[in-house]
Amino acid sequence: MTQFLTVDQDPIWNVLIRFAVTLVVLTIILRFIYYRYSKKKRNVFSFFQMGIMLFLVCILLQHVEIQLGVALGLFAIFAIVRFRSENLSLRDMSYFFTVIGVSVINALADFIDPVRGHIIINSTIIIGLFILEFLFNKREYLSVVTTYDNLDLLAPDKTTELLDDLSARTRKKVKKVKIRKYDLIKNSVELEIYFKSPDPDSE
Image 1 (cartoon, rainbow, N blue to C red):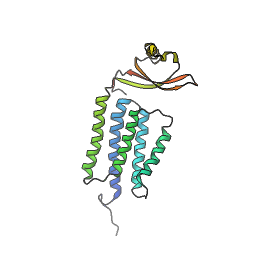
Image 2: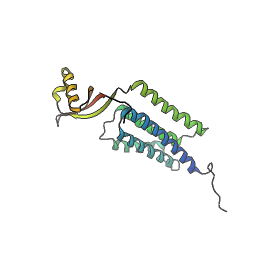
Image 3: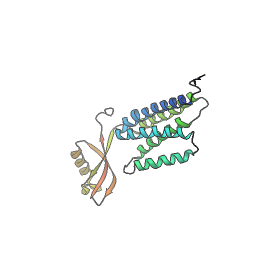
Image 4: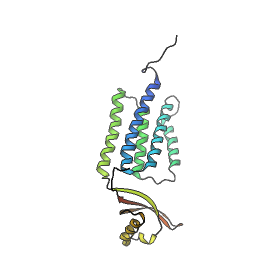
């Protein structure tokens, strides 16, 4: 006689519920917090996909004799390969590790009360990000990275001329600039320029 497993007996339902929670949490973190303040749509896709894949890898490791540290090490290697040509800011890296943490927690954490445990942990992460963004990111500025070729204006006494030149080229009121990387061979420099957003919530 055929026997059917109930929701409590079939482990696939536990995986699907954890996966659904992970998708919801990642959507809130990446779409409604990270993208709202950074406007970096390309990173949202990459972080989201990495979070999904890490969750699935961790679920698989529950049935494979391999240490979690080895798995995370392999994932970190792939991440380094992916971002080897990217200049991620410290803030972006913080979100990247948050995505890793959320995926691992939701995949592997076994709480005495699963529902309450996942709600408390995930809510703490989300609320913490909201508070940090509210306190340290007033959404006054947006930033973009660009290559600049006029090295003569990088002198400390020509800051005003540099900002005016960047404003003329970008057609935005550039407020400040940060030098990220020099390329003396190409006689250029990589700058991160900051300008005021006319509408912080616009996409």
